[in-house]
Image (cartoon, rainbow, N blue to C red; front, side, top):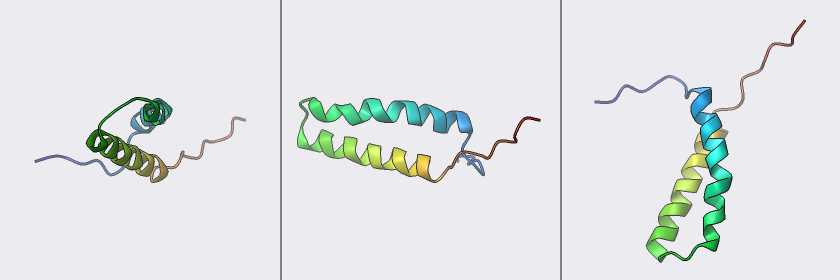
Length: 62
């Protein structure tokens, strides 16, 4: 049984944002159709996580 958080940590979203451009470059690599499909699915899932967790508003410094 897993324990799910109410929100995704900012650190996790930041890491996914760093990984996304690297994974997007995989289309230049030769891979099977099944692997290409799995990669595209993973990219879509990562994008959904990033989009569903917007940057929190920071308090302005005084």
